Image (cartoon, rainbow, N blue to C red; front, side, top):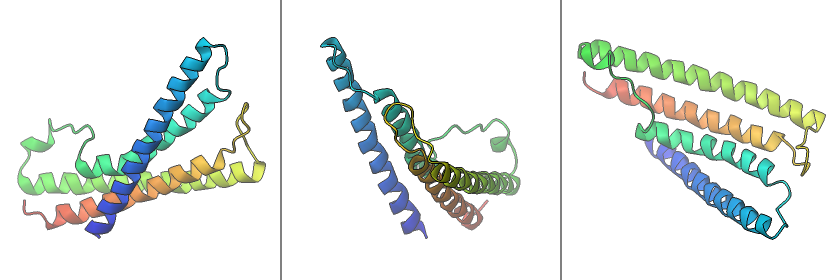
Length: 156
């Protein structure tokens, strides 16, 4: 399971980096073309969608690497067994949160597909981005399960 989670989150992180580079290039090009009074139509919509995708695809790897905010004020002051319990409980809460987020996002994406909801300027459909968010949330669930298993294997 470790290999699957690490590879999957790694690929997603690389994809997030590629999207980020594209966003930077698109924004730069739009700014330059605005100078010549020829802006790229829909840049704001594209950058908004892509920004969401970057965050969604980078989250599992960031979580796996422990690159998120960690408040150790209370946890580091308790004995090892209780610390382990707190860590497992927080990972279970993360698992539940992202499972329900994935379920709700998939439901929302389905509704967007049925109603054919699109952006105002470019008429880009919303549902693929929301389905990508749902998929990313499921990968985050895998990361949480992996972290729970690792924590239970670790000696207090």
